[in-house]
Image (cartoon, rainbow, N blue to C red; front, side):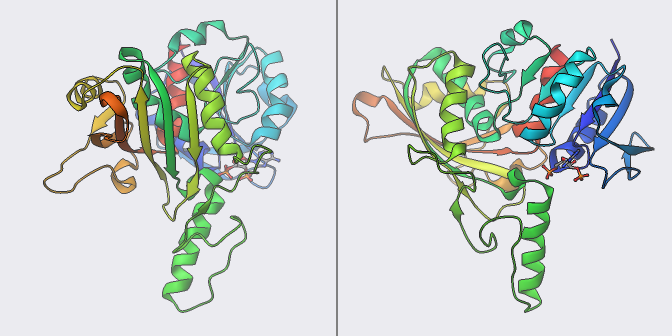
Length: 332
Ligand code: A2P
């Protein structure tokens, strides 16, 4: 049934992608409200050939709204989600505000769609790196339980928002023009550089992004015994994340079996052309719904043929955020 929909953070990197995806998938809507800060109030965004005006987000914004797609940051979700659910809306929240809250389902539709049914007005969309790892890891885990995951990420600046993307583009322009390269949004220069993910480092020495990849996967897979260690790094890429994933299974699993499972896995596209050295790349993953998976090979350092290595790329803004949330909304 067509719903009255609101997008919280409509002018941001994920917010604008919500608009594209709702249009591309012809999501059934009775109305669409675009919400952002007062700085953007009155600004027009294109949707299905019309120009829709952005409104300032306030607690009164949710009257008559049935579905909220939220991506304006954790503190704003914490502040406004209660008003939205009190008004009768279901909130699909893209921030980390409620992901680990008991009773709030944390959903990757290819993995745990059944959890959506348990919601109390709030459904959390997982972290982007978590989603991109979970899409190929889950079908393998379901067929052959995984003992341990070792993941290293190569994360695009889009995860830090539209302003971080604009900063990387500006750094490239400044460098090409011989001007000094400056930074204001990300903590270090992104251009020609690689740095540890810009989230706070917790007491265990892992940054928040790394801890999210473990905690969220335990919740999504309903498998708290899974051993996971992550190293999360930003690279000078605009919008798709890549990950090197090393998988240790409990039992021997051949490379051929992994290929057979991944070839049929929803949301996965195998890109693994050894002859031409053509493997998943963020430029190819950008604007795509599927997570590209390649470099599929047996890890000889794990005994008895129980180890597999993968390299994956997935669009951080799309499957890592907006698309996953719209898929959840479609299942509601
Ligand atoms: P605005 O463009 O008006 O600042 P991103 O993740 O790309 O940085 O996007 C963040 C989104 O959250 C933007 O749409 C931004 O709107 C919105 N936002 C930021 N601060 C506020 C606020 N105080 N009230 C409402 N929306 C906000």
